[in-house]
Image (cartoon, rainbow, N blue to C red; front, side):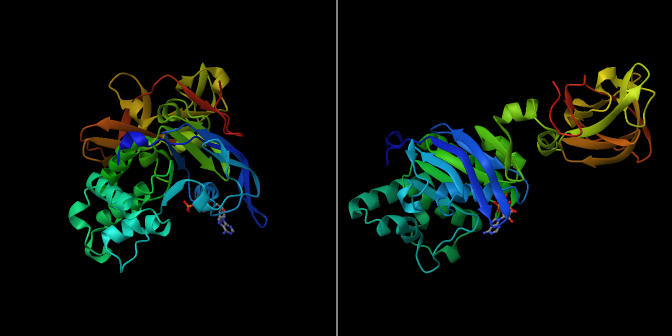
Length: 354
Ligand code: ATP
């Protein structure tokens, strides 16, 4: 297979709606993906990620709206006519077929000529490190190898769009990290347009060109990972991204400005911020010897390279992520240095305040 032969297709969704009876799973979703890009659909359980992917695939019929792949309206077309390949959480390999037969299953069904099949198999197997395993049955493979076979089966189809629904969720953490790197480099090498569903924000941030963060059947934010991190559009986005995510603290009026609720001695933002939610990235908060914000250590969690502190300030909880190993007794006093107030949100609408 010659990677330069491959080219991803543009994806465009225009006001795509999906209802299951009275349940609106997708509220008029509009978005687009550039050819050769990896778009992650991210969000909590039940937000509609899988439904959106299934509508893209043609496995679910949209209640309204238009799906275009490569500029072509595919809204009414069945999956096989859309130019897509798919990988699901369950690898769905045939246990009685060997690896080679599993990879080629779709091509046989589509009556691709034998010479062409053999050459695609050889190329894909070599690329995926599966050449020595072609004679084995799925039952004789590790979980990671089985997932690689499922990927190979999608790749060999040479479709311009590849759809993946939580493909790594059955793997352990180490293998997951390896596979996400493998999928990303494969997608880039082949120039595929990929839509990848996950609820894991680390997976999303590390793989995506574009993250579509969903909530309750709507797009909460559609941005690059860097934008999503630097400028979350809503308190929900702020609280979803980051390890750990932003602390969101209620601000009150205090002498000389706005303070964290219940801690009126220290203004941390200008007076007009009173009533807003202040978002603080734990990596921007640090203990200090200077007169900083007085707080009380609630817990210290050692993660190897760093320690995550949870500290009570007034009636709120501030997290700090600091390099190294720090042993701190719960209940001990601490002083914190906060960054300038860069992220403020309206508590009623959740929207970012300018
Ligand atoms: P998860 O991460 O748990 O898979 P998700 O974000 O993929 O969640 P969906 O599976 O797309 O969410 O579900 C979105 C909403 O649509 C949910 O409220 C779900 O209950 C509903 N839903 C999905 N499929 C059906 C169906 N076949 N019939 C009725 N309701 C459905």
